[in-house]
Image (cartoon, rainbow, N blue to C red):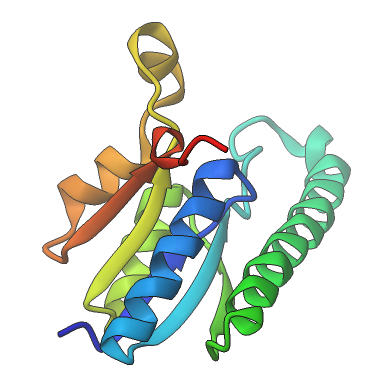
Length: 151
């Protein structure tokens, strides 16, 4: 049913839950899976040339964080016996990076976490999952931290 599953990760608990859910789907459908991490390569655009050094430091730190988060996700997939591809994607918005990656990789399902923000936090921080849902025709499985079973 699903031949290629895209799993965006950001190091959060909900992304870990999404990885766990994706493992089950990959095994059930014998799917290919790709894990991505999206970084904004130009977060200081429009701030001025005084921040050029800060931007270089930011890109180095963002890439290091992306690599670390992807490694954890890959290790989780591989420990479950699932082969996984991975990529760091650069985009000015995370949702756009996810949608564009899904299109270019010809994914047919996106499995992602959502922080479940409400009220003012949602207004200020936005919702990546909501934006992905609004901008793709692909099925999207959204998992939340409430999907964690109590221990």
